[in-house]
Image 1 (cartoon, one colour):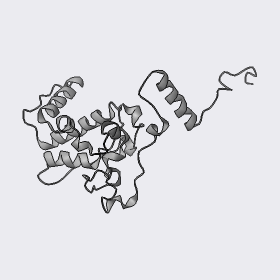
Image 2 (cartoon, helix red, strand yellow):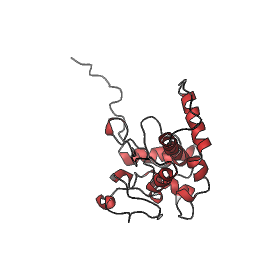
Image 3 (cartoon, one colour):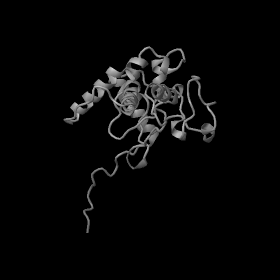
Image 4 (cartoon, one colour):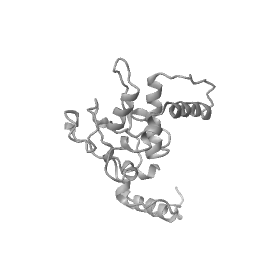
Length: 196
């Protein structure tokens, strides 16, 4: 027969998602992190099915139609972008966008650094193909806007930024990969501000 005495952890409190969120926000405030409000931790904007048919969802006026629903996203629907642009303009017109996401020297250097940090003993060509530049540009956009996300966590790059990057580094055949979900097709996401 099992021990009838006290059982450890039997009466540990269980918290619902709202209580856990409030505890996490409180801890961040105590650590003196950025002004944290609950709506900054809200999940990304829900995508309506009609987004595939037009670009009326675009608020910055620079988005293009995208092949999948998850990619139909305006920069102004991304909370961390709103922290970077105060005037409700487009992120692609931010003074740092060109340097961070379109400058070949920066993008090439980032690929060299990534290979070095990962221990890959691979030389990066002096002149990369456009696919490599696009890959690096999408990563740089994500780091710039969201900070480090962690393994397997992905964020959709807004349509306007994708369009600008593809205009600068086009595929001759017009064949692009698009957004790829995390491992096992899960959408692994963290709150916008939590990612920073």
